[in-house]
Image (cartoon, rainbow, N blue to C red; front, side):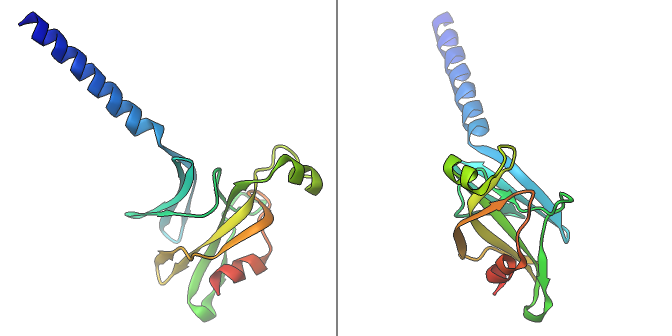
Length: 155
């Protein structure tokens, strides 16, 4: 009887340890914004970036760390295109720049910059993530981007 209780205790401890390690190791919120009553998160899970909004979770192309581009005032940078029904276009940047690129572009070490980006659209109150990806350009989280990139993702 005592042996059975000890075995059962060890089994419970191992199960508890396993469940705790599975739930805490894989998901990490990197960035989040609130825009037009939408809460949108960028999470890292298993070395990939995902957008999480409502009950949706969508894999995006840029690699961690991924961030929404922001204006110098630290607010999410976005553009609207009413003529095509787009309330807002946001950009997520990721896939960190190499040290060589950082040096070529004269980027300080404290800037968070990526070489891949993907758009996020808010249209008619819904969130859409087009498959379009810009690769190879340098976009930094706190420096924002030219409107041409927002236009590209929205059209």
